[in-house]
Image (cartoon, rainbow, N blue to C red):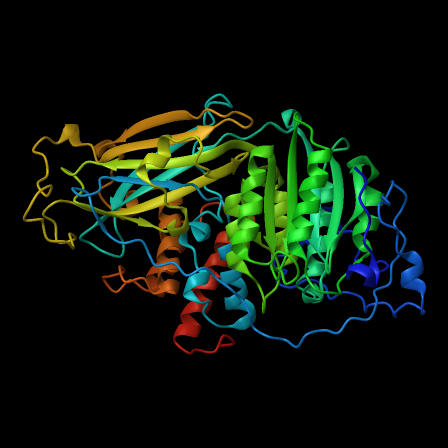
Length: 562
């Protein structure tokens, strides 16, 4: 089926001659320690002569057929005044749960990292604490790589690591730290990638930290692809159009040239863009490849299908097609985090936030395998706590990923995807029966008594359920959590556990969660994290220490220049 390319003022899609240069690991940028801001773009080209745009518009039914894209000058478009219209999902912290009443906790894994990028952008650029709803603890924790032991191979793609440790922010409770490590695909054995880049070129993307940075990010990714991988390019503004037909990465110059022509201008028909991108991915679907739509936007959809719930429904209907979704957010001011999280969770997707060239490199170069190539779908975690050892528990984070108990065994219920080599970390705060950490009084009537048997000292049973890519039936893994998994002092836990706990404490401080006690504050977070930096090859953990210090200074009204 042929599809029109919708161009220039007819559809609000504006492109311009080379406004960005191809970025590679060899251009010296990789040696920079910190790149918080992208290089500002070149000034936009002058508007076209009268009639030029109309002469270049293609009739309905025309299809780009592999020839180099012409340089299209944007038609004049009124730009809206700056307005802060950011949207974050409102979710309360998970409550403390009585094990006697509800012994089972179930949730979908989450490997998204968008929240960490947003928090960093607030602390560095805005020099203010982020809104509490922008802080998702699980995304803060899972931003970092953890050196958990690898599983044996693709047939058993996960290894579980559990540590029960004293709690640094409450001496009366403990933490149960759960680390899940995914199998890492051997580079020579990875499948081919069939990628559709879906780029928002609307007027709201006309900012150095938006479209120019998105183009730089895609240049980096293209340089990482193998010759037989394919790339398609779809853009949307007032409507949507296909700019580049599926092109093998061996023709990378053609892909780079198409990216260099993108220029922002117009309103935002994001729903139409998603529909066109999925359609193009289906037309070129390869069952032996990883088929993925990659959406780069600030999330400001204001033309056509704009309701978050309608977009969620559309994306959810696509997830059974075998096409994955990656959502990458850019910029501030009208960043729609709520919509991006919603569609990412609905459509076999992951969500990230790119605030710098360094973050683009981390996500699309250093972690390109985990970003592009899944090892498991619909991954769910369930923990059944033993009331003889755990009177109460609280899952730290994952508020938007909670599942009903019955959902765990229902293969029709969607859950998160895990990419090659990804690790997933979850932390529970637990209180022993009779300890001062217990917050709820026992029930007078029914269900409140803990069993006498200790069940050989078990804290609980950890279950992991997942599907191999392309399969409909899930696989179950189980392991008990016992006293052998416990350490006597927090300092005895390994550095991966201690660092992730420090990140969880930092995120709770930013949100203002009510469960931090014992005077636990910014200094305690910094001390715990500093003692658990490990090798820190790329300096991300050291950067975390800087963010903790910035948050402390902002909170205490101390100048960041001191």
